[in-house]
Image (cartoon, rainbow, N blue to C red):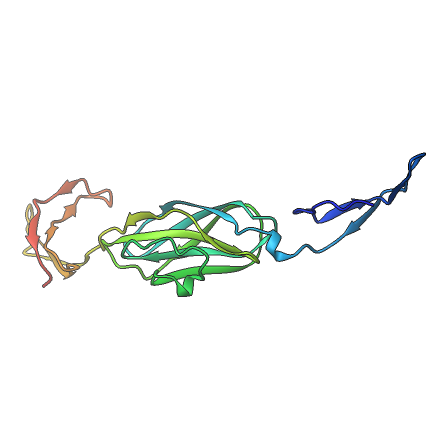
Length: 206
């Protein structure tokens, strides 16, 4: 009888063979299922793709599990921070240097995935990595970055005043300038398509 090294196979064919100087006898092949030790698996391979749908306070983090490492993953997600961080390696996201993470738990094979990143700061750079986990541990993709958009000012259109036959005064209030001076003006016209704009003025809230 001979023994051979068993690698990452979940289903194996076994055959009993005996031999002497005169003959060799081979039995039938029997297929058996067996659970292999976790040490035979490797952490998954993960790719971080560029963020998408970037707004002032939200964005979509994108990742791709390109190799599960021998068994399905049970976690996947995105870590992110306002500063660049080293690769966490085989470390849980909660124990990494990244301040925030979004995680899913289920059974995952290879393929792309997305995570919603919320409560971001406007006009701020963010650094992200995709990650995944199986019984062999965690693995992270390369770090990518994006910058959120500036927040949108809020304004109120007030009733026109000094309305004459050919002239009127247009009135508005800049309610929130989001921390910087804004170029303010009006659109007007005979329909909701407007069509005419006034010159803009640099204003702050008030």
